Amino acid sequence: MDLSPDRAQQEQGQSAQSQAYSYLLAQIRLGQLEGGTHVVADRVASTLGISRMPVREAIRQLASEGFMTLRSNRGAVVTALGANEIVELYEMRAVLEGLAMRLATTRIDRQGLDEADIALSRLDRARVNVDRFITAHDQFHDVFLEYCPRPRLVGEIRRIRRATEPYLRMTLKVSSTAVQNTTAEHLELLSAIRSGDPETAERAMREHVLRTNVEELVPGGV
Image 1: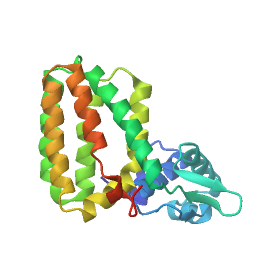
Image 2: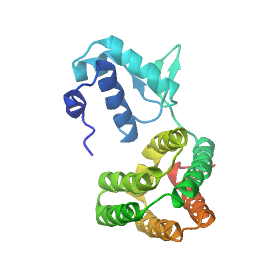
Image 3: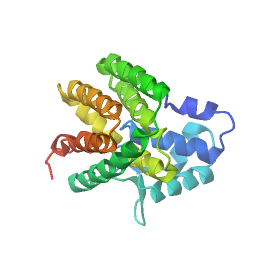
């Protein structure tokens, strides 16, 4: 997963605002810009070789999506999530992605199941590298989301996944069992959707998402 500023600049057809948005979102997702970090538009503009105005527009867009907070005395800061907020996001994702799984179960075909098998193998091979593991993790979940006929639902699931990604990265880096447990859980998810029973698949997805230990994501707990 190449989320570097050089790559952001090289994207063909991207507007300056899109470049700034992609760069800042990537830095937040990677944990390079931690919660509470003050983001200076001039510095971002200099890094990307663009003017300040599109950077400011990108910051406003990220603020509207909850990734940044605009403060009158400090300007833009990366939104810091507390334990209760992370719990709420995971609860929301469990319900939403459970519904998406229910809807996908009756629509997924042999090709989709084969793609899920491939994605699961990729996930297993990526266990030694957190960046590759998270990319493979998202690709696995996206296989099922491709068969969900509710685009707004899918968009909200992906937004929540991005919002919690920095905290997931921290857990995977410090926990010796998190990656192994996550791989096993995804095998269970694949078995659930293979059953062809929407209720079984929905329940499996909800349980999978809610297994997340927020006390590991945020030191100090709820």
